[in-house]
Length: 271
Image 1 (cartoon, rainbow, N blue to C red):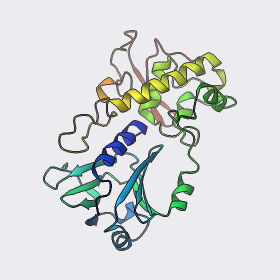
Image 2 (image 1 turned 45 degrees about the vertical axis):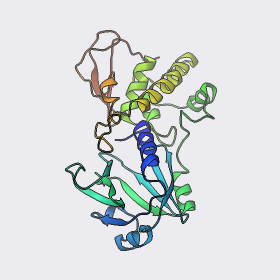
Image 3 (image 1 turned 180 degrees about the vertical axis):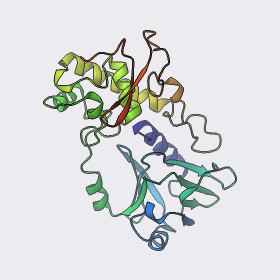
């Protein structure tokens, strides 16, 4: 599932290529990906221009020139591709939005969606999201306060979008590894020093992942060599059975509250 680095990577790329270009054509292959009838969506969106692309957590918000918004959540398996019919991936698309010769393909929206909303509706949808760890207003002291009094596992906190927005399975595991903490570590047992390590790990891992295009390997467009570059840099996520890059131990995988979690039992601890 695309997480903060992947969605921010998309935001930056989209901002380079589609801003202020008129939407010339809209094709809907799966009406369930929308919140309004396909005919209404096509009628309202065709001819508009995207004037700004915003990211909030794992969401992208396309600000249209008439004040409306397109709210995108890719969920599990979703991806974007921008280009021509000839060079797009050989996969089914659920929505296609064309900007002249190039088209933005929304792929894998079986669980994800693209909703046409007002500014107020968008604000209400995003309101329950928690703060982001890369927000300028976030710091170690605020993060410590956010964790104090909470119970449950470390990973459950990191992937809880109402507590902290933007982190999912991959970066929760990578952040825990960087901090030397088990994904199963209990929040109520963490010392202030451990919480500080966790914050330091997050503000190291997330920008590093963004710098290398996130971990999703599918390119955004022809010639895109950045997107997916972080996949080879993941130290524990999806590395079950491999040697730990830090201590030489073996990376394990467990199920934790219904989610897979990867970690090194030799150099990650519960506090």
